[in-house]
Image (tube, rainbow, N blue to C red):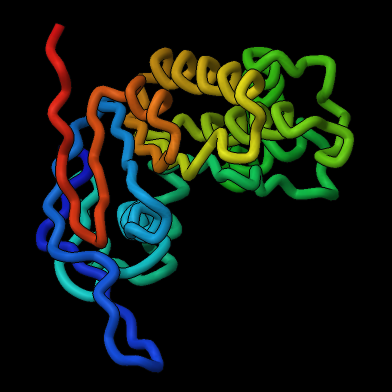
Length: 226
C-alpha cells in the first residue's frame, strides 16, 4: 500500500479540555487510486488530509507513505519526503504573488534541482491551456487560471501522491467543472494517487473511493456496482 494509517488519532487541548478531532482511523490506499474524503464542515477531513501529508503530526497511531512511518522522521526529513513524493493543490491556490505563472510552476522543480525546470513548466502550462499566460502574475489571472497554474505546479515534480484540499471550492460551477476535468485528465496520464477533500458530491463521485468523515469518525461509502 502506498498510504496506510493505523489507529490514527488527533487530540488537541483547548480551554474547555481535551478535544478529540479524529477517532482511531485505519486506511489503506493503493498506488494509482483516486480517493475522496467528504463530510460536513468541522468533521475532521482537512485535519486527516494534513496528517496523511505529514503537514501535521498525529497524537496517536501512525501514517506511512511508501512504507515509511512519518512519525519516525523529523520535520526536515518529512519535508524531504514531501518534496520527493507529494504534490499539493489548495482551495486558495497559494501562488507566490511576485512570481509569474511560469516561475510559480518552475519553483518546485528548481528547488529539486531539475535541469529542465523551464521546459517542464512550459509543457505543463501548455497542457493546462495557459501557454499564452506564462509571464502573467497571479493578480493578472482569473481564479480558474490560477488554479490551473497550481495544478501544473503540483504535477511538475512527478509526485506519487497528489493531495487536493477543496480544489474547486473557490471557483464558480462552470470553471470548477473545467478544472475538475483537467485535474482528472492529468492525474490519469501521470498515474498519480489522488487523495482529495471536497464538499462537492459530484466531484467525489468521480473518484474510485469515497471516505466519509462524521464527527472525527471515518467510514468508507459503498459504491453502486453497475
